[in-house]
Length: 182
Image (cartoon, rainbow, N blue to C red):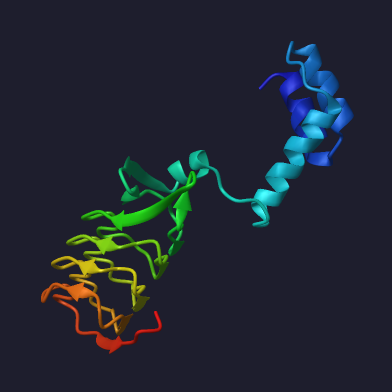
């Protein structure tokens, strides 16, 4: 790390936007004090949950792809044990959780949004820390072994209209509560 980078770190941490702007300008990067302040405000708002995550932010948490009717989550690459699947990524609804997208992940809590219409086979296979899940009424289909091997899964709340494969909860024995208010 060179001296200018080190000075830049200290001034940014202390909130000295003008000094940071001078250093960046010196390094042939033309940022005004106002630009730096604006960026610091965005980062702060994002950190405390005031600003929505961007598509780039979501790429650090999920692998996903665009399909005709929305977004499909292909893999969870985040490290948190409590996961909230977004209902929208880049103005498109999250509509499907692909096979093995949470396979053997150490997640304890997951929130599935009402935009999800399908949970494919083995989507949550082997999530041994998962104890309870609420499947939104929008999820019209749950595939084979979608929650297979979730040995600590104690309670599942889901709609009576959801088409659930017989083996969706194989190797687990949760109490299933049907409710039309999910």
